[in-house]
Image (cartoon, rainbow over all chains, first blue to last red; front, side):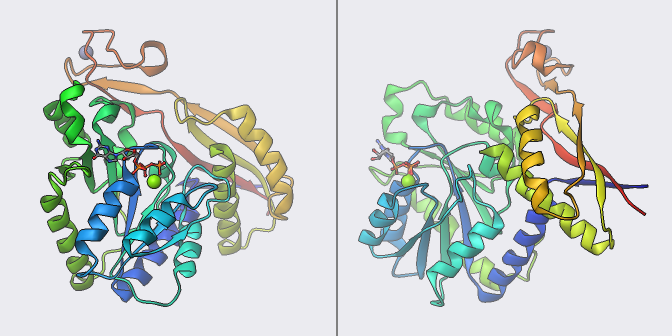
Amino acid sequence: MKIIELKETVTASNDRDAAVLRGELKEKGTLLINLMASPGAGKTTLLERTIRDLKDRHRIAVMEADVDSDVDAVRIEKIGAKAVQAHTDGMCHMDAGMTRRALEALGDEPFDLVVLENVGNLICPAEFDTGAGKCVMLLSVPEGDDKPLKYPLMFSVSDVLIITKTDVAPYFDFDFDACVARAKRLNPNIEIFAVSSKTGEGFEAWENWLNQAVKDWKNEPGKTIKEN
Amino acid sequence: MHEMGIILHLAKSLEETAEKEKIKKITRVTLEVGEVSGIMTDYFTDCWDYFKKRHPVLDTAALEIETIPAVTYCSSCEKTYPTVQYGRTCPHCGSGETWLIQGNECIIKEIEVED
Ligand SMILES: Nc1nc2c(ncn2[C@@H]2O[C@H](COP(=O)(O)OP(=O)(O)OP(=O)(O)O)[C@@H](O)[C@H]2O)c(=O)[nH]1
Ligand SMILES: [Mg+2]
Ligand SMILES: [Zn+2]
């Protein structure tokens, strides 16, 4: 008998698959965004408005990790972007292998931007690298400003935090400054936007960031291994 | 089904290691699992016993779990304390501005293999 010390995370094989996928997407010039949030935070509504605003500028597609239904995919197709249902094999998250299969389901058409609407959950999706170039998380005002304290990993792995449903802020005691400070303490580089998908407030800044990210993904030399 | 998902990845990671290192049989797998990783160890072991049979390299491997205690840091008084006992409120100063610094991990520590 022989003991081999490994000291690697249980998801090491997924991390490797994700790095390969990210490299392939970089080569194609397709920015994949992993969009994560709690159920009902407003992921699909944010996408509807964003696609409506940007569909003439970028070729956009969406992959909906809905467990059983295609309602979100149908909503996206109505706006005029291609959408597929991504199958999670009954899991609480998408991993790199499932993401690859969902991308294959989109077909050979080239896209500048593909958004994966991950399973609604602030815990599990954060642990699995999907191969996305950027991770974007949503936190809606009714959920409360204490979420960075309760779900630190999600805030640590995200490149962008979008605080949504700002139009209902008058009815809740959401403390924006406290939330931003908590998120920045976990992740000093996180970009933060506050938007309302109902009124369009704050969309300009978010969409500017997105336009720049799509451009940078095509132009900047490949750095596809995630460090964290 | 969080445990099942993790077991699938664990089995795949181990198979890849076995292939790379030319290992025929893994007889024991030792994991370090954080106290608040959300993994239910009993259920996890059941999943393991079920899944390992599908992988010839793993089918006799025992799963051993070492627990890593959860520790929280308080940014108000800069002290640490055991998470499971006190939760998110600092027992030293009562602050709620606290962060988990250890106890969320799930790491393959080592494997025992046949020569
Ligand atoms: N007031 C307000 N309501 C919003 C906003 N964004 C989304 N909603 C509402 O919130 C509800 C959920 O929105 P969805 O976009 O379906 O949320 P989701 O995160 O995609 O939900 P799941 O995919 O089911 O997890 C809907 O009733 C939306 O109309 C917003 O900015 N302001
Ligand atoms: Mg949705
Ligand atoms: Zn304290």
